[in-house]
Image (cartoon, rainbow, N blue to C red; front, side, top):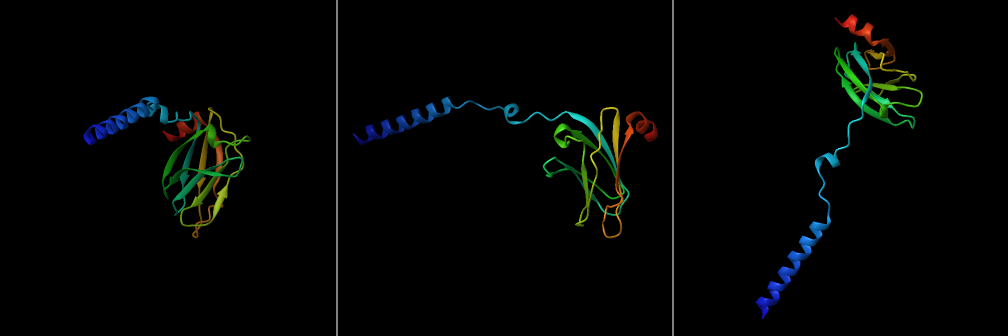
Length: 146
């Protein structure tokens, strides 16, 4: 009698588990992974300083989103998506890694015809106050890079 009761309990538990699994939709990786935001423009960053620098996009609410690090003496191309922009344009914040000093750009309008050029400079204590963000026509930038 006990074997019969135990068998029925196991069968009932198995059916309940099967029913629970059958009612849940199967998620695929494509459903869980958000589509990447399209790149609207780019910023060519050049770090002339002695410190590696973190580059952040500043949103309208003041929150900073990390975009990339630019090592000392190196360059990086930074893609700019819609989520990186404020209503008034792109605002970047640069911080020399290991320093509490930051530099924040004014809102800069960058479209598909222009490329942002970020020249990062920092003094001996890591203050990036001399950093500059400007827009250069993309064709001119490509011609100069050759």
